[in-house]
Image (cartoon, rainbow, N blue to C red):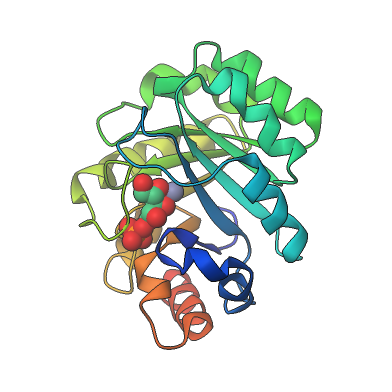
Length: 218
Ligand code: DX5
Ligand code: ZN
């Protein structure tokens, strides 16, 4: 398994002060940027222009999570905007292999996300094309939702597939990850952890990043 990485989501940060909000999580490995389009999910956040400004404002790499329709067409703009990792939802992609190769060819890490009810087994043969697999532990769209324990067996099965093929694919979890739930995710085989409300509702977000990391490593 890879080493533990904490990727706080800015979805619950103050959007009027994003540069300052990102500066509050200096020990984060990546900044998780949730891009929503009111079509794939019933919520709207920001696009490539905003993401590019954010990328310029911090030395922490950006981990874009694209919850958008027609993602084959729109994903490359997020690599151009400066994201080091770009995640598309398989449910929104028409040619996931081509898209993953395109993201890699542009120089970013390619990642694919599965909603809670999307099984991992049909995508076993795709894993070598991916630098990371994101297993959603809530239905995408909003921060602050309750962690779905029903995804834990899928995390275990995904970890087994990664090991079976001798891959180094990172396994990310996103949704309801907190001090209470992170150990379960780590025990199931996740190594990259998104946390939104847990980090930004804490008095000291960077101390929460450290606490989550310690809990995941224990
Ligand atoms: C949900 C987003 C998540 C969200 C996580 O659709 O993809 O990244 O911000 O927020 P919490 O940690 O509050 O569930
Ligand atoms: Zn996300």
